[in-house]
Length: 390
Image 1 (tube, rainbow, N blue to C red):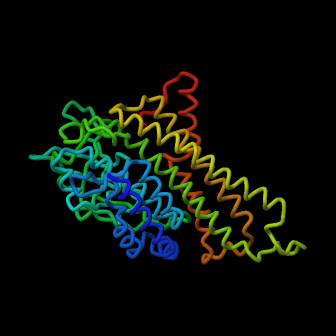
Image 2: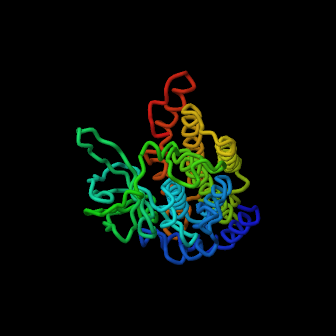
Image 3: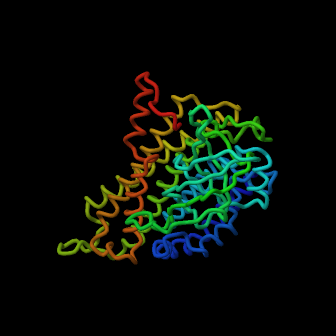
């Protein structure tokens, strides 16, 4: 990876922002990211960011990927959300044996969706396994090339083991059941596998995938990118939420000139002290969340560069801090929304969608601040995190 590669991707995304923002309302109408947005991002190189260089990818660091995700989320929250999923899916694909990696990454640009819940069942057959199941909330599945899906295998002795199966989207069906009030454009529909054959090399242990301790792959001991799947997605999530909030702030400022406060003598909203205070509070929440997220990313990169894995206590801290940063972003958007007047209710005014989307995103089980802060609080007081999803 070169700084030039990173700068070129970011510059191309910045150039595409007006068009991506314009297509945001279309994403909500279609219930998925529009094809034109996907084409723009593909040309910008964003689907190559997490692909290893040996397969023609850019292999950008977490910091650089997070910067790009934040910029995209500022233009279209739903697309930013999907980027966190597709990039994490690509990270997990890099934990599979070399044969599977070549299948996924050959060509250098890929979108990999992710079904974390182990709602599938695996049955051993010659050469691999048969997979059946349904995975709800499968964000970005319509536009994905591959899906990483959680599944359970029952052993002959009755014990069960959890795995991630790597499956081409062409072998799955999609149920268009994504009818929601927030995050509509993410296309988080249900994917279905009906007795799909999964070769043995496209299966890795669930626990091992979360810790990065999978073998039989060229990059098992390569330093610099061993962030851990949960820490990685949480860092991207916080960056996405903060980018969304920055986008809302930009939109608020664009609407500000000439706006008064209806039914009052204030003909310039900018001059009202309460507006000034709340805008400053929103901006400071964004900056505080960014500083917190930057610290998390720096820690993860330091550990990755040293070829070390963060401790469970550090990973619990990552979950708490990134969820808290996401909540600060939500609070910033809520302040801006409350200052925007009744006209913001129009679907043609993007801030209402940013507001609805971030309210929905922070409800996600992995992103919700309360359980994440609980984990962080537990380790701060000398207890175990209370979860293995770290």
